Image (cartoon, rainbow over all chains, first blue to last red; front, side, top):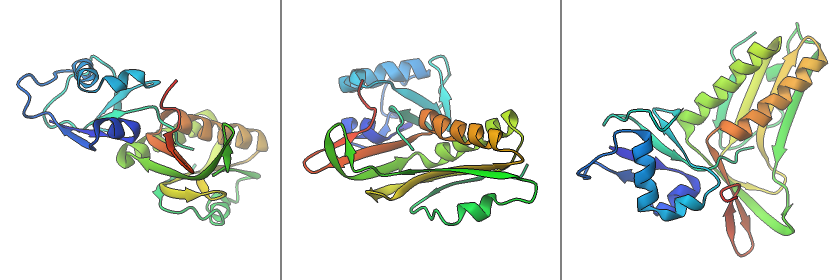
Length: 80
Length: 139
């Protein structure tokens, strides 16, 4: 289970991908992943917002995660 | 209605968008070009750096184009965003529409850029002389 990190989320984590496959208890849902991310990186709590995308779509906390999903952490967007 | 042009590119050529939107059935074309401003929050900006989650960004840009087609009777839509390091005055985003009448042109063009800024996973870092800041990251 690999998680892509972008923008300030990548800077906070110090890497652009996070491999969760070694974890004993992998997150089963977006909500659990968010919880884990905040535990790993308390600085995430200071951001204006933090979203998760699963397979290229914004996903709410109740979305179930599977090991082959493409998962990304989306900090506040600022295009344009 | 034609298939929208949705792109993420290294460099924006503002000259091509007119031809891309030009259309026999349209009485008007509206284009918004976002460019790098040299000053923000009382500080001199040297450049902006953009990065995207490209596959998702293209998908979200496509959704915005489809929403615009559903809301207004448009003929053509272009949404193009640049990534990488951009200097002051450089174009970083161009959105545009063509339609039979100007009202829908103006409204749809504003909708495209406003919605892009809210939903498309693209990030902008402002680079000042002695520091750099991810825009909108913190409240």
